[in-house]
Image (cartoon, rainbow, N blue to C red; front, side):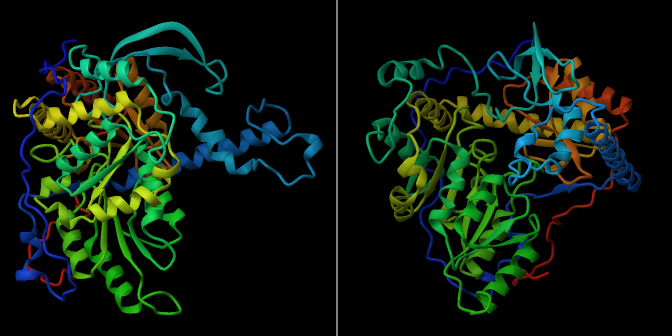
Length: 546
């Protein structure tokens, strides 16, 4: 199948000049927003997200489905206990039965009896470049997904609808990767040291300067692992006596970082500004529990695009609240950097927010940039502090040189005057809107923002999750299905990720297959009466109250 033709991006482009204004005045605590700014006028573009509720019978049948599977799970555990069915799970040795158990059998009930039924839909081995299409090694199981054996057959040209390859830079174009090849020959594959010791290379400094220019901040620092960028840096920024206000749908890396920090954590409802302001007001008025002393810091943790919901953070309103209550803002742009905004600079550019209004800008290179690692950008003092206090900076190995060059190449391509990177950003937006619009027309319930390349299609019932993924693979379409506990128990879904590298023909093939599968599995639940979880504010409200 023909793939879209992109001009080669070898990292030799001349960058654009900075396109956003510089530093704003220092934030202050005020009772009302400056100039009487109302909620509705905070947005320079239409902001609407759909979270349509399924009919009641769908929720009832979903609970019944989990109930039936659970009952059969107890029956099979009973049979395993009496030796009527072979047990493949780990178990305590008989001679250690009087020891404190290392393995709690019941804690793995879900994995043993529910996950194993559909395990074949995950961890499938890919044996090609994970671009818009990939090759898959065929495997079969003889013991109901406990073990697998490979047949030696390769399933060719499976359409990839699951990778975070938003701009299509996960590629093996020889001309585009020429600079990466040269860096590999010059520096080798690894550094074998930390940034604080012998692992600080000149290309690392070049990348950090480029990241700071790309997101329009004073400075930036890069890390070799995206997950660790959150989990090891949040504890360096806040600790005991601090308060973290975290969105309920934040990624596990943010959750782990918050827990490791030792700070008090309070959760606010997803994108619910009234709930967030209530927590902020309570924190400012009442202070810490028991002592009622003022919090040392109040840090708001949010993501740019939420990878399970496809929703975009209500950044202008959060910035307004952050200024009003003198809090700090930590923005994770893992899925949004490169994927949204007129020039791919993330949700800050998407909403026209001044970058200096975001105290900590975090992002990863694992999605739009086709590489690995992450970054934190902000004021120069912030970055200098993290260089000496971040566990990733002190103990983790430096980013691999060829990976560093891949990121530099892609970032220069997006910044370039010749428009090769901007073409990909625009194509991603057009294909995202096309795919979402067609899915809505077909009658599926989809979540999120119309401009989000993450497109969740709701499946709901556990039995349909495995059937959907298997039937789609038979049609040579690779999809990611997600269920409980990664999602609410009644909201299992298939998550599609759109790429600029997808052709319209590929998307139409997927849509035709979805149309067929929607009728076969009865997945078209939409009644075309969406109820928005996060409503667009239309009335002026200077206090941002409900």
